[in-house]
Length: 498
Image 1: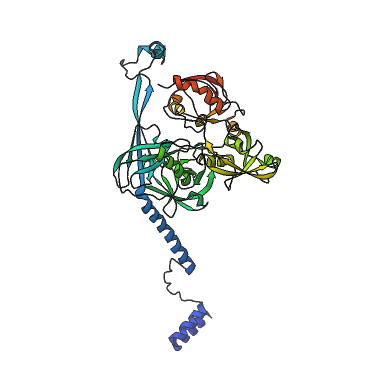
Image 2 (image 1 turned 120 degrees about the vertical axis):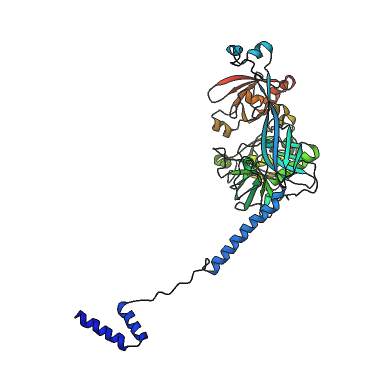
């Protein structure tokens, strides 16, 4: 039977035209022709093409911003001579016979140790803000430097003069002797929005003219513990050691911030960086160039943040504002009629969300300026007019501007409830150490951030006023005696500025 079917098919192929036979075979055996496919376009639709064009435009925009801003970004190299107490030479090849008596043998019997000097190098970034050579960078990049060098993007090098520094905000101004320099325009940091694209340009790890891209992650970041006046822009653009002092740039090619710090547990980038808003930098820079120092505004109040329970107790719908707990006598606040229990919710028309925000607003207001404070008193809003004063000298200790503290290499601040909880202390037990400069007298004495100062020169200290008064005699003698403790132990530390 199978043979008969095959013969019949052969007969049909022979007597039927080619085209017909082909279709019959295709139908019988279900054969389908496979046509050669043309290569598909990488863009399959009009929408895909538009998306690709937009991505290419954004990529081009990043490149253009980097090309425009790069020439104004500089490499800052610093050098300082550090004096370390200890044997300057080792005359005995197998060790000193006096080692038996301990390291302080010479100090106890001869009154001093042999000094040892060595050069310490550091580096950071900066950016040019005027054609005649003014440059912005961080205070911590150039602090205590004996020599500062600036290398431009075109390879030229200049020795730089430190015009002025402000440790409280971590801003410093340098000046080089040059003309017709490329300038990075300064933008308006008040207008930035979370989610906007930004570029960080600088010299991480000494790698010059490095560009990283990210977005603004948050605004008004405070309580970080980096500086005394914190209103940081947070970004996820990669910032690493060496980026400090460099600009954070928007897509218009304007500096909207100065990169200053990173949040890290490893010492390297972990996705969170902080920049000082350029509007704050502008105010500080103007004063540093004109006078070499910064004069801050003063209101004369002690304030605290609110929680949900406090907000309800003072007639507020949400825990925003600054609660006044104390008003200094004969202060601008007292003369304006501000009272304990008032909650400051607006400063010159701007909402006040927390204490750090108000402190920064007041500090950046020039003394003598009249401003309006909106307060909530007994559940009702009230507007007061106050003339901002100048910070008393004793408050310089709080802002880290005190010269004696800088020589000690010590930064301190009041023990707030948040800091007390963080470090395991009770409230109002002392003054907390927030910073110790490397190789400083304080560092060599073993002091570390997080330690609590309970006494200064045998006087108990609980407030910054106590601290300032107790430290007064040390400014004359160059010596200070501190009673400090960490979570477990207390000890006395004697420090001398040599």
